[in-house]
Image 1: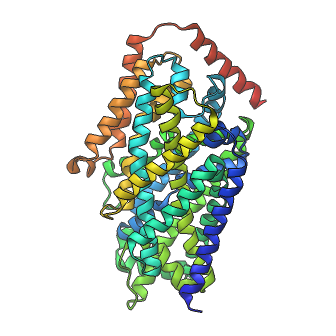
Image 2: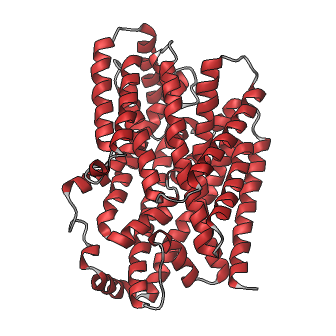
Image 3: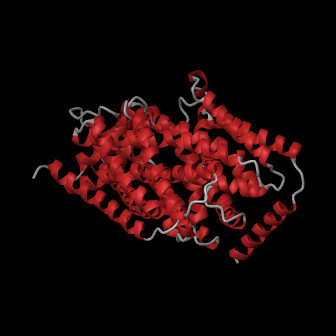
Length: 495
């Protein structure tokens, strides 16, 4: 058998496992809450690894290593910002959001939580939230499908479009049938595969590039500035990279995990597991890029056509075929875990927050679950169409969608959990102006070259929400009671 055959066997076994998990979850899904939120039954390890795998999309194994391979450690500011942001998200948002979504109408989506929390009877807030999720997640899902196409193209020489269709078909299948539980369980497997692969590649690579000293010497030969966090980096660039951390407060596919965990007490264990996994994975991604710089400098006969495939290329060079297949499966894990998480949240936005809100159907849960599956299929088809030309970089697509969610939802989520006086009108205006700011800023090159669009978007949303809320605030006994009940439940569950 050829090396490629062994690698394909590993990939086939991995995909078969994902489909089996999807079938298993399908048998445990009986109603809309199960399909969209897993019945709020996730333990800390599943929650942490699921949130991490959903967060760290193809950019972790392709986009980030590619950026550092091309520009050096100046790109590591992004990883630093993400780690800080993720920690604060677990610490400040997870416990309160878990209890508040339970107290306020047993909300199962972010739009439904905002509507219930702010007692918005107009439905405008819920519809606007659902539309923002629909638009930005379609771009986000598209970025994952681009990564899937690039994966098969660089690994097996397969046409980009065939690779895109293969990845899309498998992830659509287990998400469509298994829902949130399938997404969460597959995320655990995918998170573990990613974790070990990201540590294995740079560790083995160091033995082939002369250890730490030989590797660092080779990197200095290529460009001594590659080992500096500050050389050639402007203050605005550092701010832009660190600002990625702000995005965590508004990412629906991540914070929905906080709503699904069994209890507040378990968020502490989940935070430790999640941040530990994340820090080591990011360290492995950075190490992979640096080892790659040294390896290709030392081996001039080897070439790397696309920097975003450095992890894939090194995996194929460093390991025997079956192990190389596992390394390749790690890339698929990163890609597929995020696509599936985003598809299920987009499906919930379409059905729970748009269809039910606008049409006001009185259909039963089986009908809604069916519609949720159709929503997964429709969004997937649109994302495939967007990914088909293969013109955008993975990191560019992810950064735009990440900024959109962070700016539109981040300030609203924080204020809704910590400030009694936020109003539905204030949240609506803040959300819309934040999303529009990102949309405009993110499409003007001279602006994005100087400052990441999440910064102005987040600030605009925060200021507009605060000012409009102060102007429109009126005491509401039901809101006050729920706020107090949420705080009481939070304290009782922490004991």
